[in-house]
Image: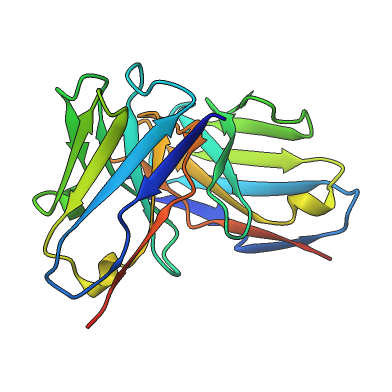
Amino acid sequence: EIVMTQSPATLSVSPGERATLSCRASQSVSSDLAWYQQKPGQAPRLLIYAAGARGNGIPARFTGGGFGTEFTLTISDLQSEDFVLYFCQQYNNWPNTFGQGTKLEIK
Amino acid sequence: EVQLVESGGDLVQPGGSLRLSCAASGFTLSPYWVTWVRQAPGRGLEWVASINQDGSRKKYVDSWKGRFTISRDSAKNSVDLHVNSLRTDDTGVYYCARGNYFLDFWGQGTLVTVSS
């Protein structure tokens, strides 16, 4: 099973600034990587798939990058609603697995 | 409105069983793989099982193989997850979602609590 490790566990950034979240895979997953956002009490929402493609209706402020074992999610011009939980997930190798999440908090 | 609605979650004793259902409204599920994902308190998201469009292919994560069974009913536009021999660490919110690789549309989840 591929282990996905997200860092940091909590990231403190000021509104209007840029946040960069990291996700590392224990072995190569090529570009088979997705990112999700989860607000309190809600289901996750797909942000990014194929490492860099935005999901339906996702603002251009959200940018995914990386390949192989190292991936990033960059959120520019942080808005108040962005300070929630983010997960990465690989789908290159069964079973598909998620990272443990990064909580983005207001600095 | 396009939505996935889970139901069937409940408080159940260890060793008990439940049938969780995922019903689609506003669209048809038949062209899609459907997946169940669990979110246990403090344990993040865990992939549980996936089923293909006509129900002929089912994929289970080993942790749940043998205790969980996924099925679908095209007439009801729904997908079920039968969960047996429940343990306290099965407690969590169970989500259904559309897809087999990445999940592009999720329901709001149903809460399963396993406790004596």
